[in-house]
Picture 1 (spheres, rainbow, N blue to C red):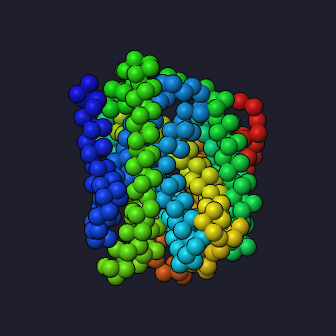
Picture 2: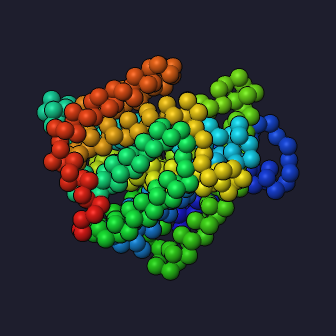
Length: 400
């Protein structure tokens, strides 16, 4: 019990300063707010990650991995929803909502997917003492059920083209994307999954008797969600204030720092699978997370904007449209690479290089050319793999 309680107690302790500041009415600098509220979000996300793995014991079918991804990106949902909601009354906040969305999506695919493959490659190479065969033959193989995830990503990407075409995210597009996500959860709930093999902290939670485990999961989930909801708004505001204070572009902070904080535990869960010799599970979790973000998260923005007092359409300026086009291009490229349900070493390196290039060279000219490059590589690849493409498009509508 000590091994079980200690990590949760530590993470709960890390959330206390944020709660004290919020309910005590203490005034602290924006930089300290970023630190304390950011710690609360990250600590809560870690707790959610641990219990979501253990919850697989009580959830059967592919729905488990879908809900695992939903729970893991809950902090991202809350932060992004806040930016969109705040934009309803304050137009200056409009571009932060889309910045957080596009940054989180590109970080997940451009960094998360390839790093899982590279970690798996290095682990296998070390076990085979640097065999040259590893670099040639290595690749993460996904199960056939992942074709469903890729099919939904294709559909969502086609719908996402409406954003750069119209210059806004309309409420009806948001509704369609959320319904698409609901359909996705229904679809994956029919998939059969093996009994989860828990390790570390999730294994300690899973070892509890059934009703004690369920009670523990519920209490921790409620507390972590509470801490996230309390911390998300001041964390987002203080991030913008800190950027102004330090002379750093606030757009950049919101686009990259916020997603890194909110998605760190999710990455760590996936990385641990890779280090345990199960990179395919880690990649499957991140692919499912990409579906969640590209459907439900994107769809929630115009709805949150309207709830905050805005119109039924979240407007996009030229920079936001460029960001969306770049994110669509990266998504299409990622799907094209995975049509064979295999992510190899060279493909992973290419994904990472193109992603890093947009950060190292952030000028609009470079980013728009990389967008074009994504499509220029993807279109011939989609044609070459047209058989797999057709199977993938059909997968969401074919009975398992």
